[in-house]
Structure formats: structure tokens, C-alpha cells
Amino acid sequence: MTRTPCAYQLAGLAALEVTVEIAMRALVETYRELHREPRPADSAEAVTAAKLVDQGGRLLAALDAHRRALSSPGHPSA
Image (cartoon, rainbow, N blue to C red; front, side):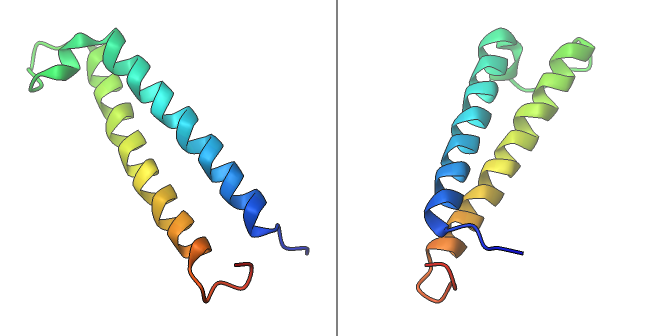
């Protein structure tokens, strides 16, 4: 198994982060009700969009942590 050079991994992470951010922004713009607290009467689509935005935020946090690990001085590919 070959190792992917760190620069390629970082470039891939950056592309993935941008894609997730664009998707999250599109959801927030499409479902304006995401700008307020959830209500029981919200549509199923709005509830799903809110969950996707939440999971997207978690994914961005995980990608950021992975990027920091790759960039650390002790990482084998750094």
C-alpha cells in the first residue's frame, strides 16, 4: 500500500471542505426556517435539512482535525 503525499491529502481535504460548505449554505438559503429555532410544525424537509446542516458542521470539524494532524510536525508525510 502506498502513502498519498501530504500535499495531495490536504488538497483533497480542502476540496471536500468547500463542497460541504457550499451544500450547507445552499440548504440554509433554501430553507429559511433554519435561521430560527426548530418548531414542531416544521416540514419534514426542513427537519432533514437542519439535520444535514448539523452533520455537515460535524464533518467540517472532523476534516479540520484531520488537516491539523496531517500538518503536524510529527506526521510521517509532513
